[in-house]
Image 1 (cartoon, helix red, strand yellow):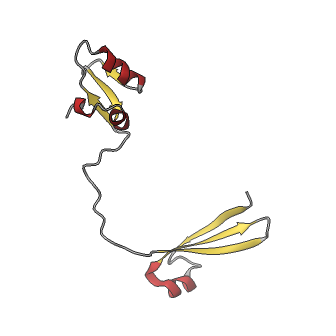
Image 2: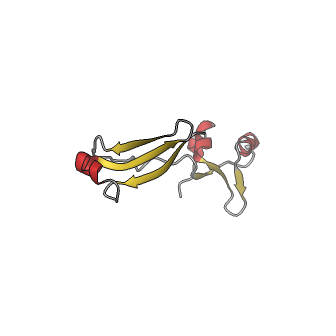
Image 3: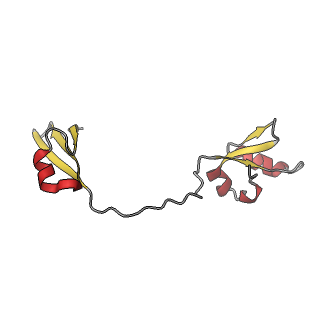
Amino acid sequence: MTKKILKKIKAGSTGTKYMTEKYGNKLVCVRYIYDSEKLICTKTIELIEEIHPWNPNKKRIPGNKIMHLRVEYGEKYIGQLIKSCGGRWNKEKKYWELPYREVISIGLESRIIDE
């Protein structure tokens, strides 16, 4: 690899005065990329294009969140399916534990235990 970013300077820091005057509050940072093959240094800048309100979906469940699943006694196939997807049996609480993305992929959302 011949290109390396050796300097990344935040806006307002020493060495960004000219760029800050030119771009104002839109400037995020200045980068210096050095190419050891071509023996050149490239200066790049990162600018803010747009700022708008963002309302993240607070009900969204992360894929890696461990979910608790209810499986009735005798449902061996469901237990084997969960186990094959990396699920673990919690002996103390008597339920299966499996990451949410896996629960979705095998269609067991209806078996999630709310706690």
